[in-house]
Length: 187
Image (cartoon, rainbow, N blue to C red; front, top):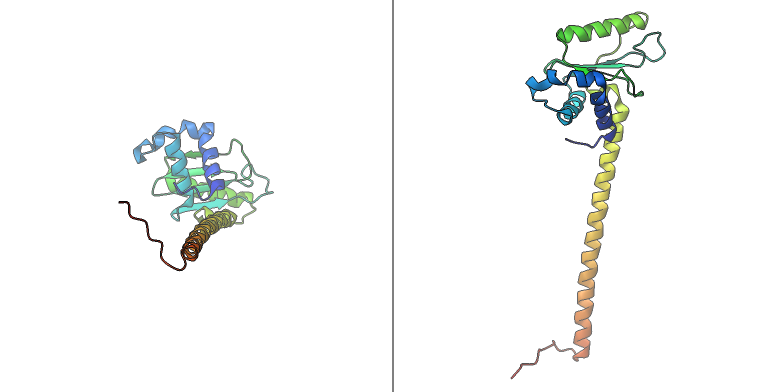
């Protein structure tokens, strides 16, 4: 699993560790999810997927859904509910019997809570929360810069070795009066 976005990975772990998610783990066996590690990977990939629809209820509305995000992937029939800024009971992942209709109900409930304003539907977590993508890119850039720095350091070391080898050869030539060093034969 690509862990370039540690914050998203931590969010996936929080979602999976909730009691509600644990109660639904067996629902994911048909799609190859057998344990918590598989579930974390599934949630992480589902949130990243462009096939996943995401929406968020606005902060400050008078609703238990204030600030809560809803994600639904029709291909895997995975519903994810989480509050990105809280570590509470809202986190869950499950496979609803009514699939896409459940997501549509969530959108309608948010619309009502927001006084008739329909929330935007985004594709993938980075579209909903671009700050996560920015952090992931920044971390990748730092990793790339670190690799470039390490490569440059190795190149400098090699260059120094070559310079020292040339100087050593030059000193040996000076000591031998400009002649190549000739090993004495052993008779």
